[in-house]
Image (cartoon, rainbow, N blue to C red; front, side, top):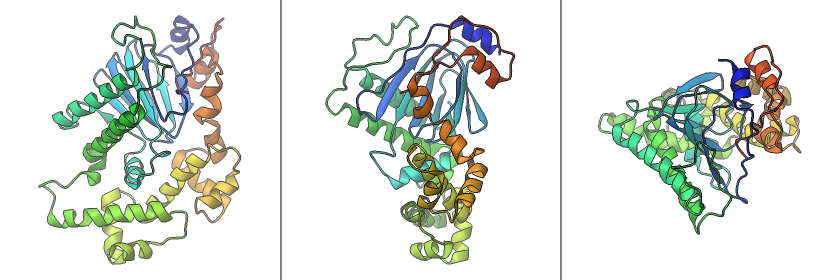
Length: 348
């Protein structure tokens, strides 16, 4: 892919998309394929492909997307977006972990991380259809007070600045929560979070609730020096039995899960630039800043300070242009001259 040529052809500066007021949700309809450099945010992000192809890299894993595909990107995941072809995409972002602290969401995002690609055939047909229905309902609710024509936008990017209708944000959040729950219960990579089905053994059904309770207990106490023994006792299992079934349930050992939970919280705290890395290490339950930095790099591939610099709020929302030369440097190509920078700000 010739990123410089592609950007030169799309050299008009992009509009800066602002979240409306203090809303916790935002929807954007994108018709251009531009390169968006590595960045992250604490919102869950849903990208639904209505035309064309796309490619998104999440924590080093590539997700090629085609028409009909949906990608759910978990909070605090470093992701990068590559131009593939002209087309149309619906972007939805929602801050579900801020206003609503639901332990099940913590568990779901931890197990689904970094992202889930939703394709027809990979999900039950009724679930796939329902997920698309929720995406479209979210879009329509978000733009319900707008005078914009979503079906006849003339290939232009669409966003809205009018206020949402009464209880509109609540209704949208409810749909995104339903979307997340359906993905969690049906994603091939997260079978352990599925609701009990007939094909599960009695013992698996019996263990589901205690294991979810264990995840909830960890979510409440992960900043403390909790142990495997302590959590096993809390849910009423022996240490060795709990250790085995917890690994089956989460595909992680207890201590891997605990560290990942601390890392996830640290990622949220890194958005607060008044907190030092040492303070974040202490607040997330690590014994030292060195132990925190080591675990963080192992989990994310970045040092905490490097990861912080990629935060969307520190880069994209300042309206800084991302030039073709910068894109070429990231893509590993020789830069070409271009007279107009491209603002890659898609979010706010």
